[in-house]
Amino acid sequence: MINATSIAFTGYPVTDMERARGFYEGVLGLKQARKWEHNDRAWIEYELDGAALAITNMAMEMWKPSPNGPSAALEVADFDEAVAALRKADVKFTVEPVDNGGCLLAVISDPDGNAVAIHHNKNT
Image 1 (cartoon, rainbow, N blue to C red):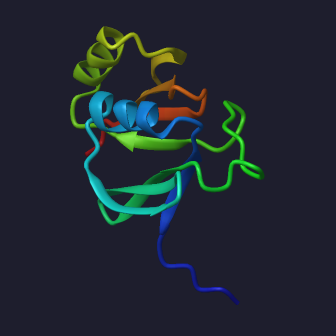
Image 2: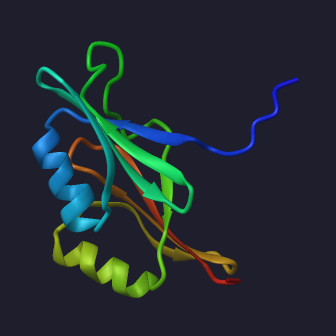
Image 3: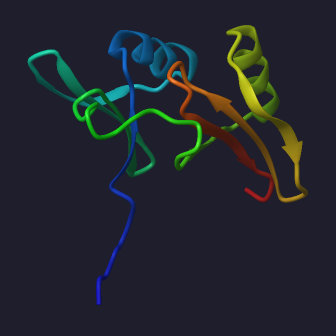
């Protein structure tokens, strides 16, 4: 049996690293924790409460950006403030903000079309 203890990282393929960093660091406010580079390719990780969200252009031949793939959900302290900041930055919403009773959720697209969820647990 496998004894998984946590999620090490969630990765997103990106086509333009500078543009992607502008989104993840500039719009979402994530802070770079680690970076690996080889030639014109990079893997950048952002630490979030013990897990990492990674962006990369290292495996573009096999791993393509897509709105139909898995989606990381970023927990935010103030959902309304996050939504307002995303709208101000003209970020595309693929799922408009919704209150399902236990949480607030919206899904946005990064510059490559990857889905990223914004989430706020109302019970914490």
